[in-house]
Structure formats: structure tokens, C-alpha cells
Image (cartoon, rainbow, N blue to C red; front, side, top):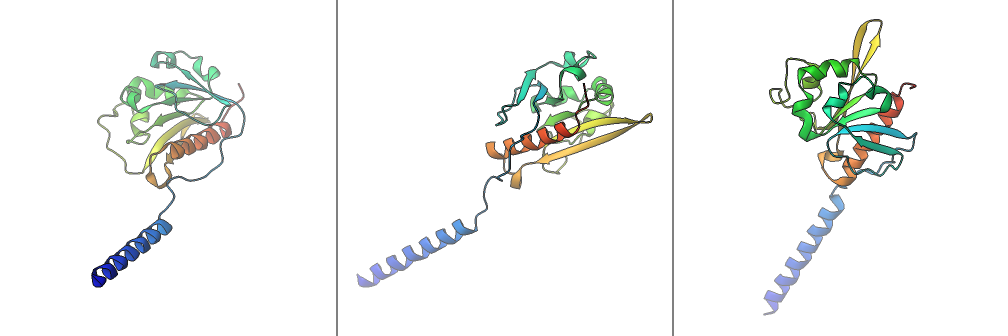
Length: 185
């Protein structure tokens, strides 16, 4: 009986030691970063607005038909298009709208990078998946002496872990990017 108690005690100590080692070695599930604390932003969104911590960022729900109106550039600082709308966003008629726009477009939860949104003959459904671990991709064309230069951004989740803290951190970085590229209205 003493022998069984001795083994039980030894097994219990071994298990507790392993748990403490694993706990000490585990990585945090979220990165701690600062929120976006710059100017107020107005963002048009096709899809559902995300939950973000920034109070100075407002989302206005829009439709694809709103992109065909020339005035959306003057109303918003950027346009977000959510995952459920990416197939429609890749239709060729929108590629020219993105190219003419003076504000950035961000494609949320894209698995295809920015390519299907810039090529008229490539759709989201037919584009290959990219394993770049981006949660969101942004594009902005800059007109430099009649040659349109494409600027792109990719935003990945911390340790590729999809949780609310990491998603909010991605949005904070996107808001920083937008504020750096705002043209005077």
C-alpha cells in the first residue's frame, strides 16, 4: 500500500511539474498594442461593421451601387469590403473604380490577396489562395505623372490566431495606415 501511495505521489508531482513548465512556455494569444489615437475617420463599409475600440472611427454601411457614384471619395476616408462580399468586389467593373479612387480600399478576410480586385479578368472565386497569412489587404492607386502606381498593404493576425483582441489590433493598424494616406478633402 505504501508503494502505491508513493507512485501516486510521484505521478502527481510529475504532472504538476509538466503543467507548470507548459504554462511558463506558452505564448500569449494576443499582442498588446496601442489603439489608433489619431484624427476621426469616416469609413464606408460593404458588409457588417466590425467591433473596434476606437470611438473616433465611424462606419457607414454602403452598397456596391454607391461605388459607381463619383462622390464616395469625398464622403469617406476609406472603404472596407467584408468577406461575404469579396466575390462581388472582384467583378471587373469595380477594378476601374478602385483604380480611379483617391481613397484606399480594404478587403477584410481575403484569402486571395489584392490580385482579384486589381485584374479585370480575374474573379475572386477563380484566383488562387495566397498563404501570406493576411487577415486584410488594402490597395490605393497613386497617380504619378499618368502612371498609376499601386500601393498595397497586408495585415496579419498575431501568431495567426483569430480572436477579438488580435482582430481589433489589425483594425488599429489599418486606421493608422488610412490616416497616413488621407488627402485633403
